[in-house]
Image (tube, rainbow, N blue to C red):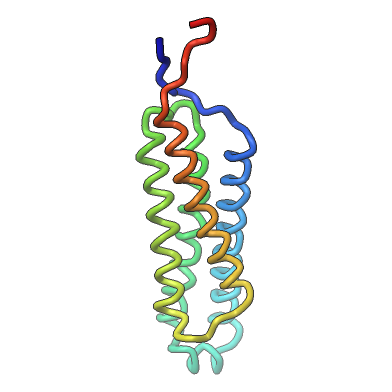
Length: 145
């Protein structure tokens, strides 16, 4: 007899996923904040970097990206949303992959240590999410069966 996985055991894998997702969320919210502060306090640097509208747009994207990581990670493990877990996992994978691609498209060769470390964390996050998804697809056997 097999039992469908409606609940996720919260172990080391899930903790690692949460830590990586929240760390990258923090990085993006931080980047949104410093970009916003730059627009407000440094008009010359803002003009040299593409203007207030462009940098304001990037600040908003950073904030939304960070919020997306937080919301999708919370939704991934919320018991009331268990039936949407597979879809939520794929949405988190898609957000993470889009973030990696956007970084390399928009950074234009201006790599920095925080950006590269964050992209490495995001790659590991995707790998862990795929591993978790494969584990969840396998049926569990009932105790004593």
